[in-house]
Amino acid sequence: MTSLEKFEGVKILGTWTSPFCLRVELALNLKGISYEYIEQDLRNKSPLLLQLNPVHKKAPVLIHNDKAISESLIILEYIDETWQKIAPLVPENAYKKALVRFWADFFERKVIETTIEFTENLKVFEHGVQKDFEGENPFFNGEIPGFLGVVVCSLSSWIKVLEMVSGERLVVTEKTCVLFMASCFQ
Image (tube, rainbow, N blue to C red; front, side, top):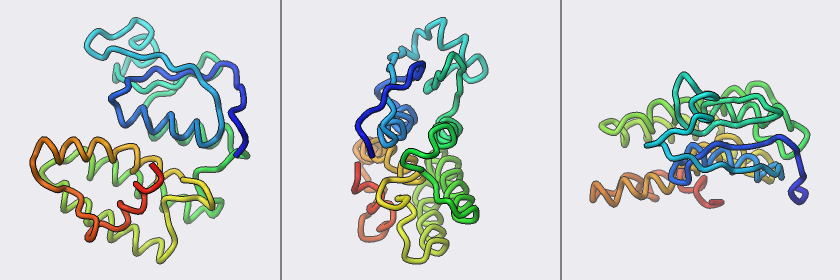
């Protein structure tokens, strides 16, 4: 990876507490893309946020050349496709790329969005990733953290907060080794 390269017109509307905003910043940093960060107060939404994300009215929003992209997973795909020659986040192999995107979507929909079934869905995620990638580390694309690594690791702080609030360990390192491996580079 090279030092940060200047790309005009790259901005993020974000909030420092959001793991979803963090994953966008991680992806840009991994690719060495400089950007302007514009902090948002989600209790008092800015006219710019409401204009650029009128459907969900939330951060993150990536602005590139005056065009807005919403939703963190979609933003990650856009970043990777736009700057595909710089530190690719997904494997070249179409099948492996599909697996990475499948497990990122599963993690997003089943692990993050469910609190009651969190532990069970995390086990399904762990088992599926281990089975599909058989000894490979799906969280890295070659030498650098990849798409799935960015998705999972951006939430490690959030999971720690949930553990503190609930008083329970949600991620037991001995039982969830794949998730532990992913959090190592954070």
